[in-house]
Length: 101
Length: 204
Image (tube, rainbow over all chains, first blue to last red; front, side, top):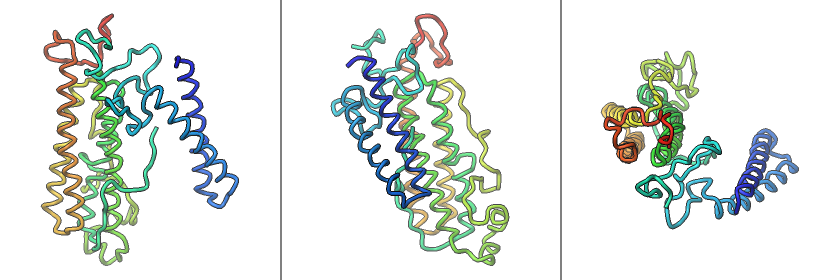
């Protein structure tokens, strides 16, 4: 998958995740609101599906989403690093010249 | 981004209130070597770390420390729940009570509110990881001291768990420091300031 798809997918995850957080806050003070509860679950279901798709293609969003065959959790980039920054990779993933094998 | 889990990392079930003990354990919430400072220290240091291992270890230990903050708060809550004014006075908890009632407030046992002046984020991987190693040892000593002052088995069981985590974190930070130093420019013999590298072509 290309870069644009990765960013677009992450953007959708952020949108559903944010909507879910908003529902959580609202439901905390309105626990009997059925419409908010339905909207919460709509966003939760979308979030779970998109997270699975993202992690299968682009790497983990939580440590539990790391690959089974190697510890991909610590592989860069981390969320605060920008496009141009060289991702900081684990030593095991680099050759002696500091390049990705 | 963080997600809250509605569980403690290790169960806290204390049968007997004890304001005197709460008054010393509170240092692990808001004292100089407490869990609040640990979480803030690690989570702030990680951004400029030059190695994936160090970023990973700081992220995950920093997150675990937030859980430890909750465990210490749970101990304080259970040790002080339902205390009468007479018990509060007899236990020397009146000086805390007058400002915070039985609310949980991050302060040292001596009454110094939590201050970030007790921690550092130096922007230098070697300096920061060395501080983290020291921080884990200092927290371990504080838990040792709490065990010296406490004879409540319900409390001590939790304190021993938390003390053991300091030992494990010390181990992981030691490995992160070693791996970080191994990945530095080998000509940088003294490994000074590996996070701040502006020389062209060397920046990683």
